[in-house]
Image (cartoon, rainbow over all chains, first blue to last red; front, side):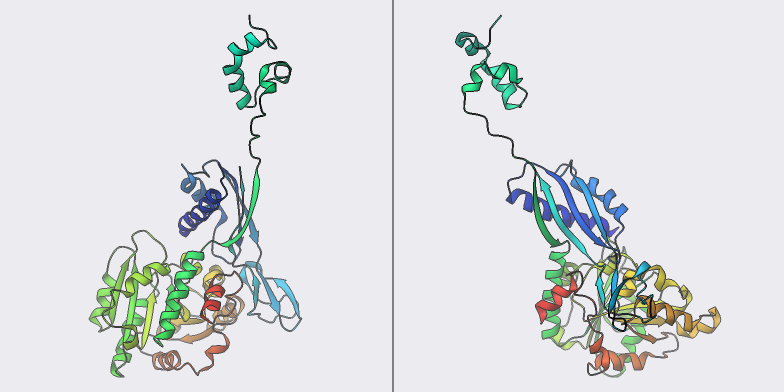
Length: 113
Length: 289
């Protein structure tokens, strides 16, 4: 359940920013989570309510944008979606070791009041 | 009955009206005639604003990992972050590796992440390996700060070691996201676990620089399909080197050790592959460079 410690990092960063900008409450927290980041969005949602309780973000909503994994194929010179983490190019079958996106763990933005 | 618009009534009715107004509940028909309309308008409640941040969630861990990486680099010490499932044979492999190194007067130290006991650390110490346990309680992974604290308990300075292995908590999901400042991430997969395990845990395997196929002496017994395992590994860990090892027979250990300790070997071309993508370990690497 490393989602719990990830969510604690979200809280720490979100509260710091909210206080810096004089927010009375945090309404929405936006995250970007890559499919290859090893994080379960459902577990994040579960951890969210637990971790935010009693804070400025107690009534906030968690909005997660899932980022598909994409690789670059050096033979086809184009990118493809690495479905289920498989980095084999669907056009030519070459295994790509250049991941373009999919490991993101990012606090994208906050909506504050 | 007080009348709105009359000064005397307004005096009496001001407190409740102000209260209403401050709550933005004062009905316009009342406000238009009551004295509160002549007061300075109350500050409008600030509307919702959006703060664009784009921060890595693990930025603190990444910074601590970058600092560790600089320390290891300055000490010229290769450091492995070893990931695997429970029971894959990490500790047995390290016992044997420690013995091999001891015969060559090389020093191995291991930082061991154990959930509740120091059993692994005691096993390693009995094999002559410098072992520092990190009891993680219920935590399912190690973080850079834990490693930094464990380093303080190492009996030898980093400069006197030849290899440091961080034996992560046995788990193929959670440790994958946490950079520990290692120079190589190693995933150990024993042949008993099945050829398709890489497909089930792509995030860990994708982050690997080296995949070890352990308990290779049992491959025949369990009917391990080597070609299929390699095909799966190529699909989810295309940049990782693959080596077979057996702690029981010792097969592959000497070659592994040579390869780990000699940086001129071709590992450079796949080192740090893809880590810049999420701005996580890429940041750490950038800070080092």
